[in-house]
Length: 361
Ligand SMILES: Nc1ncnc2c1ncn2[C@@H]1O[C@H](COP(=O)(O)OP(=O)(O)OP(=O)(O)O)[C@@H](O)[C@H]1O
Ligand SMILES: [Mg+2]
Image 1 (cartoon, protein in one colour):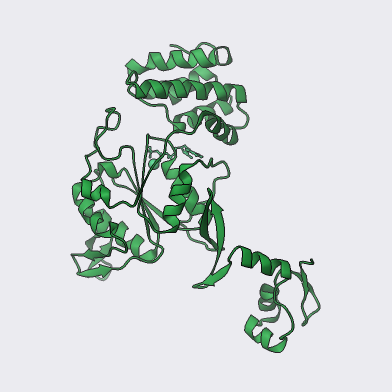
Image 2: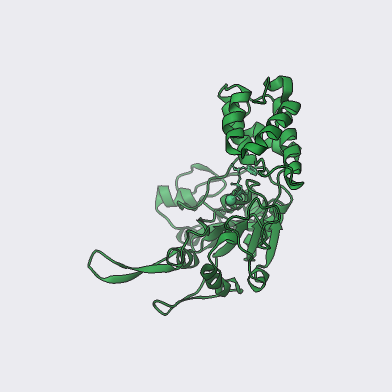
């Protein structure tokens, strides 16, 4: 089956579809062309079957098509450009829980991601958005984010008029962004009460300052991330600043997904993809040490946990030719409380040993 078409106006051979060619070369819209050449196909048979298979359709001037994201069929947008659409990360490692998150984003379920620090919760939301080309607005709800930041505040504009400037939440609702709220287990209770209204399906937001009723855009999505599920922190690692979330508040989230550290093999894959010049044997040993240290933290033998973020920072230093002990010192040991330093140093020495020379201080 040929993928080429011949333009009846200029005899030029064109691949897949005549439409862009007609518009740019002949300034003709497809409808006008169709009336003049009713027998001439606008697309090659191959391209037409691709459009059908991928369920490609135009909506509000944007091409939508079906895309498999982590095993979930999603609607992706083609050729849209927006500063809040993330760039895809070719090194991203997809794991099982990603499917549930993708499904929640596709079907407008309120989704709450929880898990230890640096397990890729934020990266996952970003990556799904990058695949389907949705803008993401990220906000950290740590105690510092006030109701005024979130909802809006009164300000004086250039004409000396007092106007209400909408905050992060109404903006995201009106523009149809994914609103990714990080650290919700540390948010101020007032912010939690405001969120309560919009956690309902199609929940509106009433701006009490102006009386405006904000209806969510069909593309608005709400994602929360936190280190604890809001029952407070068991380990004490996340205790500072985290609050026990109200049951009825938590109950309003449609889907709760736990994101844990990558399985060892997948974590090696990630480190290798990001830092290919670090030897794979060394990466395997580093990941083994991280696994032991994470188990030790779970058993309360350590107060800190070794995140994927730390391992990436360590590998970046190694890739630049730094010696292992010095890289470990600045990327890991200097960050942890003195009582953890010895165990971490010894664990790395045990696993990395001859590959990394002497590691304990
Ligand atoms: N599955 C993955 N694929 C690619 N990179 C990953 C993955 N998981 C984690 N990372 C990388 O690890 C680092 C930490 O990830 P991220 O910031 O998403 O963690 P987090 O779970 O949101 O952490 P926190 O709870 O501290 O906010 C980032 O550099 C991210 O790119
Ligand atoms: Mg995060």
